[in-house]
Length: 166
Length: 346
Image 1: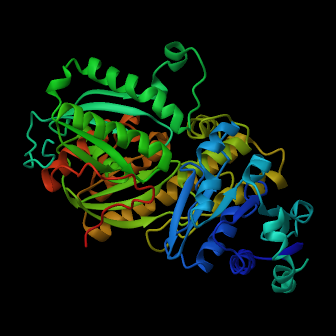
Image 2: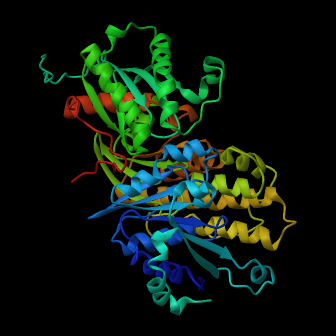
Image 3: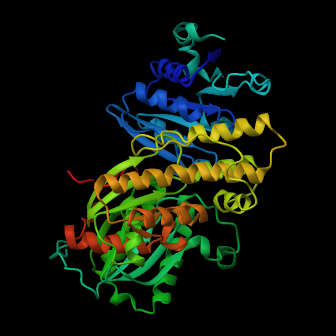
């Protein structure tokens, strides 16, 4: 599912719509190059779950956790990690299993070790940017269900995100 | 069974506290006397673990903390030149940080406390950073504004007294140190990014590119995510741009924002001075500009050494000494708290 976000506000709105379908145990992988809006997506997602404090980048601190009442939102970042053993030490799958929702920036590097997940791939329109009159804020957001957990919700998610289709 | 409850001890100038820190990348131990006199401060990344263990030790791993904690504590005790029975209390970071990493330090600290029959004191890592400045200059006067800038944090805290803090502002997205690191990586300047930008900027023109200073005119919060994206977009559009100019202009924008906010904070709360903390406190332009601003505004400017600004256990021991006096020993069923926030004034 390919979506178009013309501003950071629309990235937040798309993230909020996805959050509406999220449930405890979910793993959501955020992929895309530096500056593509992974943390912005996490901010929109967390706001929708009721997080009121600033949702800041976990690049150096590795995992930030936010108490959202019934569930806990864990926001992780694998950018600094170099070995798969280090990813295992963050125990992201276990955090999800304990009534958590886990968002993992640069999670695509961990691949299959994260199990069933939703991949959110953010992209910058480099061609438009280079042509000079390009929109610096324009982002593509591509959603892919990996495994059965998200496939079951796919039709409803698809309908909810219809207004943002590229 | 022995009664674990004991009379609160009143820490004095001779009270020797062993500090233990395992909240993130670093395994650290230190012995600090009277909350001020650092007898030893050992950080695992400074120790040649390859030589000690004959293999690669992963940096970010609970297992790594487990492997090196005992040798690091032992070295701190040997370097301090004291015997174990001389230690009066064990202070340890209980949060914020990674749960697995924190648990290694907390479990060990409680075990030491039980084995040596001395109090255990739970310490908040962020509070300890505020004490780093006091370790090098105990004469600092309240109210003080502390600008804490590292890879993981960017915050302005008003310190009115020991244990009496107000969070004045913080980053709403990326920490300043993270922006340095990511821009350095994008420009291929090397790692760690802070010193690499600092070096590259020496040959560049800080006014070559006018990068945005987000939210500089209002409030005390900061934002560096847009600046990072702006640098990346500029380099994409101008692939032949001088990296030195980009580094210098980027650094000027970050420092401009930080110093402007710190001055505003100090004026707002009527502070006597501004102290720097965190790894970015090593940045030469930030040090120079902050001292200049303090001189202009009639404030005391305090710049601790790099060893005291980055994660270490001496600050944990110092904060523990103060907490022991204000709150007494912590119970031995104290757990690790990954989301611990700075204890703020009610």
